[in-house]
Image 1 (cartoon, chains in turn red, yellow):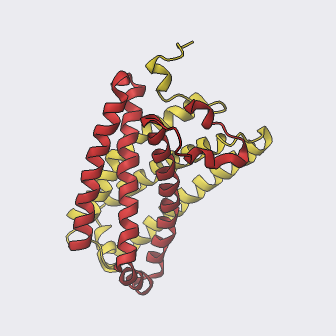
Image 2: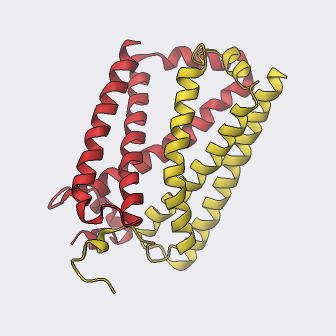
Length: 130
Length: 130
């Protein structure tokens, strides 16, 4: 049962990400949780880094030189991908909560993930070529 | 009670220990964030003429009063959504009641700090362009 995995004892949080025996809903759950944690971490990191703006041109412009390295751009692509996946899967959660597409949840999930894959690909190509 | 295998069982609902209102705020801010993030992204990366790649660009960009208002709105919504979401994840670890109170206090403090800091930063940038 998927449901029981959602209530592990405190030190068994890794069960959230256990891939064995998952159905589509279980994979959606893993995806949503990982992207949630990643995006939360990024949000506060982003706020701290933007604090460089308060220090004036030197600090910020120096940081932006670093931000153009391929490793940094790849990190940004991960953030973009997490945002797209979490946002689109979140739309499924919002829609089904409103009673829309409840019996077609799997199809809705895979449809949204197909859109996400295309969007991530477009962003990836654009970020590494422009 | 819902039937064991009815599709409605797989629709999002408040967790044990999650206030219905908190859950509702999270559900409502989700789709709002999809829209705000889209605006945040399109405006910051495509409409901003030079792409905001230097300190001077950012300061000039914030002279348009719509920008600080939009960014603060985005900040408050995203911080709220992320902290309610994080609380939900922590609830899955079954914290003791007293620990949950400490967690709640910490999350509220983190939220207030993040918003206060963000608003301060926006005002600093706006004042540099005045």
